[in-house]
Length: 247
Image (cartoon, rainbow, N blue to C red; front, top):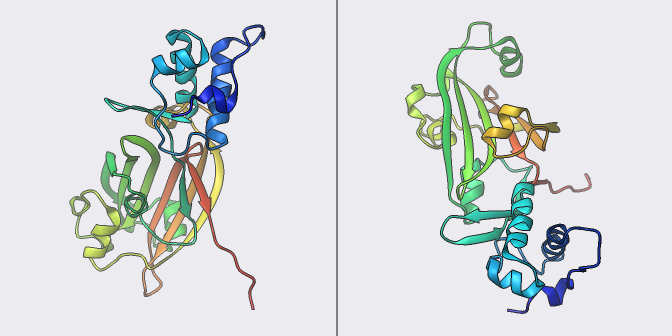
């Protein structure tokens, strides 16, 4: 492998900028210029230290900063890798698990809450339901390859599922088994800043930038069945949509 210093340049010992910050800048440049691509492994710390003529402590401090920024991810027993951004097609109705598997990632969830209740005023308006309508709520952290990607808060009309326990790992699989998987949806995307609690769950920092996607899913008979609010890490997710000129 060609040393990174040949691609991005050596560090300047006469600069007032600390060496670890210079190395961070060099690694960031290597990632942004695709010298290091998504999911590429970073050279071992000892190799980076020798390549850039710095101590391993300096290398570790530089890498720690980029891990905190979300540009790098440490994988136990494997090393440090460039974090791959996820492109989500905003015009296709697919589940998180389907999206991750299509990209060769392993999806999993950590459940925060499964409960039964009745619609709130906001949910009643969104789902076009009468006050007191029974619903099930599913709150969880969504992971891909052990990296927290999103917080998901889903409210489903109770009439669409046999029970709360019917949902094991995939909500859409459970809805499909019950014959009530949404066939179309309206989605709204907006920028948010994570609260302290959200940041802790997503291993981010308070007031880090995130993306909130609100989705209302409809059955083939036109009834609204699902209201989901998903908070995605802004440093990982890109939302794309194909546009065309109407005839």
